[in-house]
Image (cartoon, rainbow, N blue to C red; front, side, top):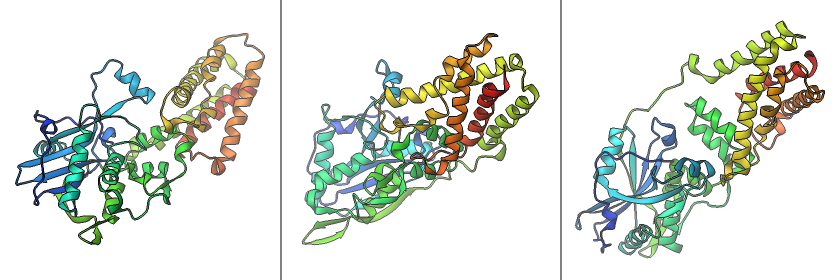
Length: 388
C-alpha cells in the first residue's frame, strides 16, 4: 500500500530504545492515511501510533517500509519475494512527511485498559526486534493494514470482538481495487491486465482489511472487553490533517477509451484497404503480433514464474497469446509455413469465444480490453483468411 515513503527529516529510530511501562495517560490509536498522487500510494496507508505524554513518547509503527538498496531488488520485486519491514519513527516525522505530500490522515483512539495498551505496545516492540521486523509482503494478504489486524488480535486475544470476519463481503477483490482506481483508468487497465481470476471471488470481511479504509471501518465496528463490560473499540476519531484530493477526473482526451478505440478503427481501415495484399501488411502485423506476444509472455511469467498469488489463472493470456511473439516474425517471410494460416484462424476462434463468453468467464475482464481484442480479432482474421 504505502511503498517507500520518503521521510523529510532523518531521525534516530526511536523503536531501538528499550520498551517502558506506559502511563495511564497513554493512548494507542490507528492512523489511516488517504491515497496519494503516486500509484504506489493509490490505496492509502495504515500505521499504529503510541502516545504517552507522561513518558514523552509519541511514535508511529509502520509496517509499510522496504529498501531499494539490496542487490537484485527489482528482480525480487517482480518475483514476489520482496521483504517489507516494521519501522518505528517519531510522530512528528510522520506528520511532516504526510503534510509535505499533501495526504490527509486521521486517527482512531482505541478504548483500551492500561494493561491492554501495554500489551499492544510490547507486541509492537517485540515485532521491531531485528529478527522479527521483516516479513514477506503480499499486497492482498500480508501488508501494512493486515499486519495491524494481526497485532490487535494477538495482543488483545479474546477481549476483542470483530463485527464479522469470515463472512463474504459484497465485493470481489478486483471490484475493491476498481473502486480505489476509479480516477486512475490507466492504472486500473494495467492492474486488470496483470491480475488473474484468483481475485474474482468475494473477499471476506477480514480479507477486506487489506485496504486501509476497510481496516479503519472494521476497527470502528469492533468491540473490546475490559472493566467488566464490552464497549466499542474506538473511543474517539480525530481528523489530524485535511488535504485537497490529489487528483480529479482524467480528461477525456487522456482517457484510455479514446486512445484504445483508435487502434481497432485504424486497423479496421487498414484491413479493408489491404485485404489480399499480404506483403503490404507484413511489417505492421509482424510488429503488432510480436508486441501482443511479448505482453502475453509477461502475463504468463507473472503467473508461473513468480510467487505473486494474484497473477495466477490469468485468462488474458488467451487473447494475448505468448506464441504471437514466435509467429509474428514469420510474417516477414514471403514463403510462410502452411500452418501459419491455421494458427491465426485458431487465434481468431479463441478471441471470438472469449467475447461470446464474456459474462460467464471466471475472470472479470476490463471492458477497456474490448478495443484491443477487436484489433487483434481483425488482424488474426486478416492473416487467417485475407492474406496469401
